[in-house]
Length: 57
Image 1 (cartoon, helix red, strand yellow):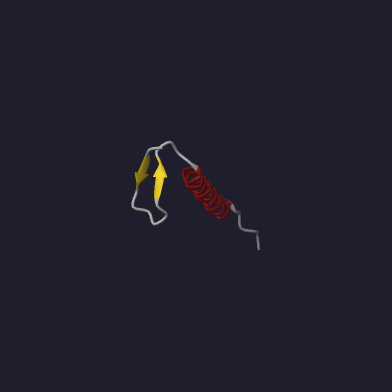
Image 2 (tube, rainbow, N blue to C red):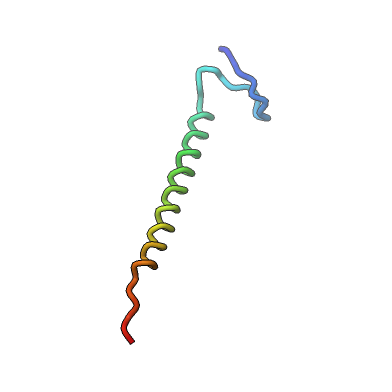
């Protein structure tokens, strides 16, 4: 089976794929989704504060 040496401490990886690339891709996807969700929450919080009408005294 052909292998690729990436310089990683774990050894060499198969050029046809394997479990490691799926794990890495999954973690990157989860991180990207979390970052987008955090940005959406911050934008909503800021927009709520700006549109809030002060109560009459």
